[in-house]
Length: 322
Image 1: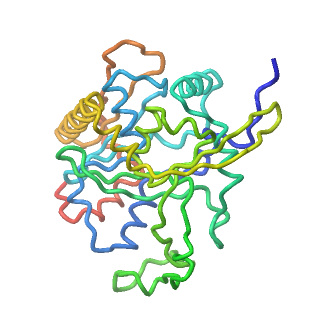
Image 2: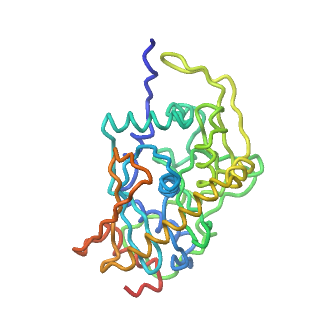
Image 3: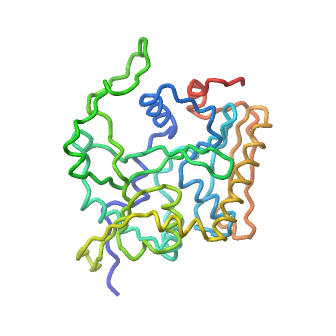
């Protein structure tokens, strides 16, 4: 049997690019673009991957990822955060994750494909990743959701438009704090986002459809690829809009039931955290717990320890009475 292809960069190693406090850059960016926006109207603040993972647990799907999430409530908003910066998994844990993902139609070799056919805009070549913040409803919950973007389309019509500048943004008035420098790269336009997959066949898998529903990427792209021992040959690239894929996934009753369970879980977690003294908990489900229904342990933080960003983050909530 030939040796497996050696990847130059995997999804796990990319985590070293994440900031230690994951929410502070997001909150700053939202306020820079729309300083009048207030997070008081937001019920849940989370990444799309955490929501998808919690929903999969509700429906009995286990992708073998260890759960250690911090939960805090600011005003009436449930903030879901990762437990610090995790650079790598253990070898056994990573192997289990990859095996489960492959069974569900995933393909880690897609990152080589992504890097070969995408490029960063001028001035942003040193970027680790690109995030966008979505706002949509899950049942009666207003959610602000972060999602990483693999790529964006840039059409000919976009090229003729004048590039936006910081003069076009509604910046807050008054003096700014020292130590913050704004380089005039302009504002990233809202180009249609693209989910890039290493092989086109995975676009029809339930795992991919679920991912597209949560991250709301407008297009999906994949290649017809011949994998060889040391490299891979891309024969062609296919692109399609994701509207039908997302709608078909949403209309399935089993997915509707799972989404309703997710809404119930998020509401219950918010109530639990809100009724604790310091409004700060973390949930865990150790790796290797294969019992179903799955059990999430909620641990109450009783010593007043807050998340690293929490004290400074409260300024983004106008009506914080805590």
